[in-house]
Image (tube, rainbow, N blue to C red; front, top):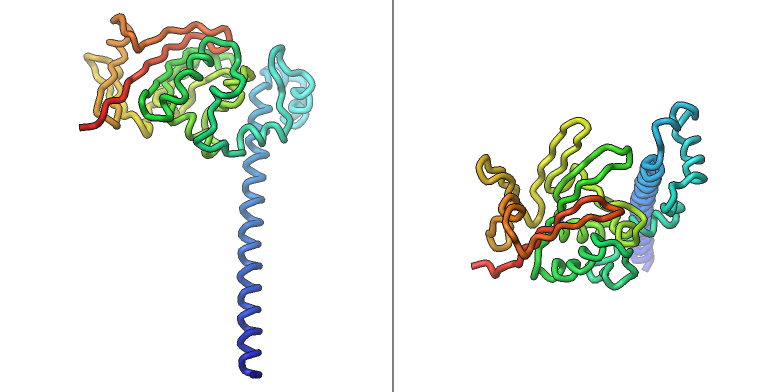
Length: 253
């Protein structure tokens, strides 16, 4: 009986030690996530900083205090808790922005109409956007709508801030993680394959995208120069010039 009691005590100590170790790991994860959230919110505030702000204020922390008080007209400045809910709370793949309140803008309305067909894999949409970034420089690029929305809903950390875009609080700006991105200020060009598309540069046909699901090739030059029913041109007061390329997905042979 005594030996059994000793074994039970050893087991309890081992279990307690494991719980302490796991708690330590969970604590480190929480601290790391808190640090990521803080950096992300700082970057969010910094996106509203103007060049002249740095001439008169000593550091980013002081400028950020000013930014909170001087938000641009038509822009709703999120608090840290609102930012956390918008960017760090995974919505899940069964959440649809089209079922929420969508801003009365031609681009956001058009994208909301395509959200479910892209999620259900009956349609695949590429968005070309030409706009200005937060610093006022011209940028343009191609965005894989399905992948970008899915990444935001399941991870909520990287990619485009779709919650704010659909609500009308932020512009849709292409970035270096998209299918393609051009910064006209410095001439830098970036290309990336996505989950759905492979980039095919062609000296004759121009930029093309191979849809991996059925092997179809979307030639951008052909979409633009011909009257194509699946190519939609949009001028948005909020987001600038945009072109939506739709591909009706065929069953892979």
